[in-house]
Length: 151
Image (cartoon, rainbow, N blue to C red):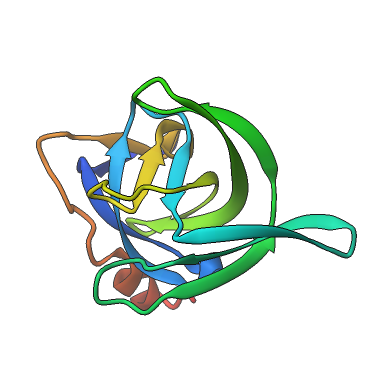
């Protein structure tokens, strides 16, 4: 059985497939899916498949990152306030605490929220556990991966 990595209630992580090297995330075991704040997005067809193009500013001092990737799904999501909306889901690699995990995340406007990303329990299942008494236990995870010879 694989040993679970302990996370704090908030962490820095990266989404290298999307060109996001560092982003603050709230670790939320109450949320089923992970959610990524996007400034805006548009869908389009490429080679017959549905794609999405979106822009994101990972943190206040960062430049805007523009990403194009295939749409994995469109599903109804109910937020913490009980409001339902149809959201686009994409797939990416989550890099956190020396672990690379393929995850699915939905694109949403998280304006007014303190964290541009919400890490939900599906992405953590079987890999991570959470200690809500701590935060930023792995803030230098991407640097450690480079030191191990990983991309």
